Length: 183
Ligand code: 5GP
Ligand code: MG
Ligand code: MG
Image (tube, rainbow, N blue to C red):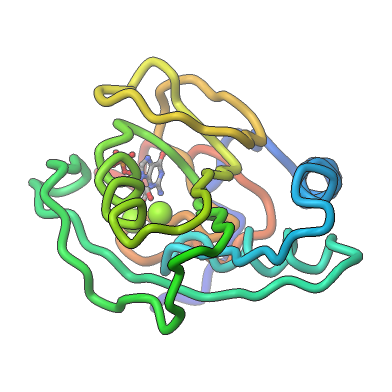
């Protein structure tokens, strides 16, 4: 790994750390209201949703449980195919539970569409989706998303958990990469 600063390759910042914090606070408040008086389990999708989970969960003023899944979708390079494999399943039995899946971005929707029906088959009381970002133009599969941070154009973004070849996840802001990174 070279010594350059992690921010150097970002050309266009879409959302700053402060904007992300604020938006997640709003989403947490909305979720709290919707699940008032009920036990909530939030499920983060590794590895991209780590930052979103950490900040969303800490915006809550009530108890909640957190669990994690790791899934991989077979596909060529950056394209997802919708064929999904579970690498790490939930540790929690979700039957009868209220579940909110937390993800960082919905692109084609193939992964979350598969995951939602997989979790629904375990007979939870409810399953909803919360995503920080969504690309409406890229959607190939209808996914019913209850909580969305922002809709964004169909561009490849990095930072705040989002990687390019496993780098840039630790950026505090979200943005697009300089063209030289890809060449
Ligand atoms: P999809 O919705 O296409 O099934 O897949 C979503 C997954 O593709 C995300 O969880 C993320 O890992 C990856 N992905 C989609 N769009 C982007 C993007 O703009 N930047 C990054 N870094 N990953 C993305
Ligand atoms: Mg993800
Ligand atoms: Mg990735």
